[in-house]
Amino acid sequence: MSKEIDAIKLELKSLCQEFTDVLNKMKDQNIISEEEYNEYSSKKIEFLEN
Image 1 (tube, helix red, strand yellow):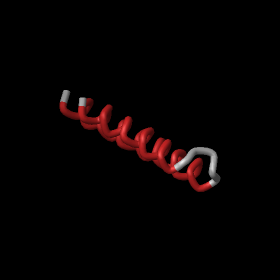
Image 2: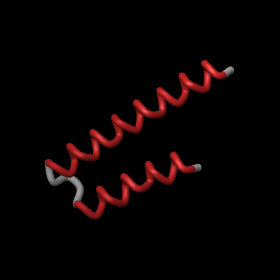
Image 3: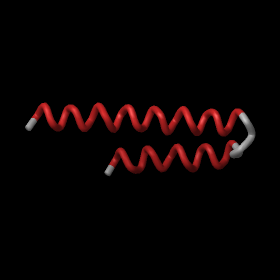
């Protein structure tokens, strides 16, 4: 069971990194504003805290 949980945690970490990378690219290309970036990236933090 512990190996399964570790695998899920690793996958979530990878997905969150991809999400952050996409947000950074969108911000850098002026697709989203700094405020939107902060809001969306805070959603990731809220998700991980739950």
